[in-house]
Image (cartoon, rainbow, N blue to C red):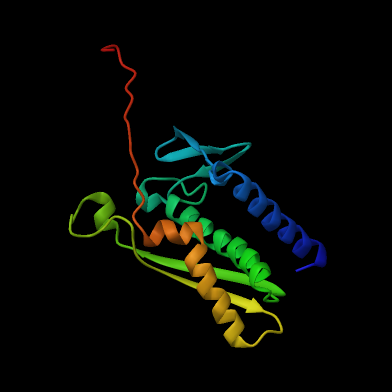
Length: 175
């Protein structure tokens, strides 16, 4: 990681600490997304000024024109891990020269298709491997891992129930 990157993270941490200590409302952030279906099972998801395509492989009804939702989950988890490792390395003073990560998850499609309601529709297990390069002793990197595991938002979404409230709006001639 470059010196400029480290000083940037240091200033982000400091500015955020100052803003939140002045007014705890500054800690509240809202992220939004919207999706528009197209083709058999594909969608375009808008994420602020960005958009991503989502599709499924043919075995799940798609054309495999883009990553599928659970692959995007794995991408979200890994990218959040990288961000959290960088931030907490800075906070703890742990030097990390490079970070790479990979993940895989096991999914039994019987739950998704409703063939067996005893099978959950999501991943049964996700395995993550994070590779850290740097001069620190292994114990420091394990300390860093503990901090990341305790503070990574996407990992938290996986490990802890998050209330999700869904409203279905209908636009029909009956309205």
